[in-house]
Image 1 (cartoon, rainbow, N blue to C red):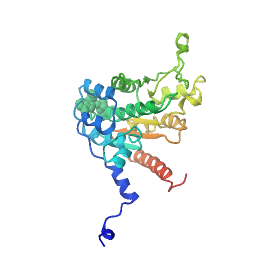
Image 2: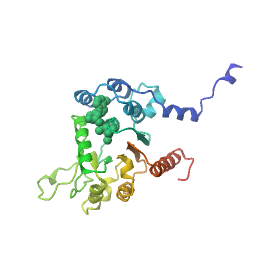
Image 3: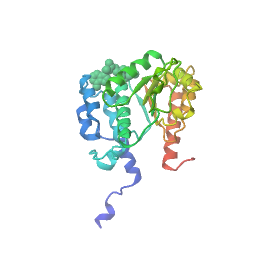
Image 4: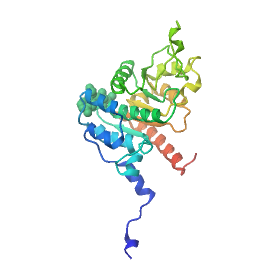
Length: 275
Ligand code: ADP
Ligand code: MG
């Protein structure tokens, strides 16, 4: 009987497919494959990006369509199928290899998609970077990519407080620093911890955070920054929080922490580990 010798389609094989979606060599190919918004595609083009770098080639398909690639073999037809950023990711690639774009494009895309399907109040993503300069650069790069997408990106500074009610604009005339109204917060751990500690920032303000990106994760998790980084991380209450670690180098102790975190989350999600 031919049937008996045919390879079994098991959950295990599906998982292997999730891990290796087709690489993407040109940004143009993202549109048809992942239903990327026209504005985002245009911004990528207008900023002069045509071919992907090595880290983008692999990371973009993982972050944009891990689920969709499995369900539809690459052709995403509905927003639901385009359900994105379904993975935690540790990415190690050299300085100058284009890591910012590799996490920023999927983040903006994910927020554009969720914006289409639900009313959102409060920021949904945090990008942490070790220095103010780096955070500011990331925010600037992000704003260029988010032009005309309605996704707001704010570089968090000391003294800012974060508002959970993003709909009201009435604070603008206050002589105090107005509350941050943003979808993506880019910050140093210290500035964000400061904002979280602000009495005006309710704990609800960060309850909508679904994505935490650690840029230069090796630095953010080294002894100098680690406590501050973990303070921010621990303040995020969303059980579905997705993590992205990006680094040029990764020390062994950091690698272990990241792997342990990703593993325990994966086990929790698949129901095989302790909950
Ligand atoms: P990393 O974070 O890996 O050190 P960056 O994200 O800062 O690298 O990118 C380094 C430079 O490469 C930036 O000036 C960025 O605009 C540029 N860059 C990124 N991706 C591409 C691409 N696909 N094509 C051309 N230039 C790119
Ligand atoms: Mg970088």
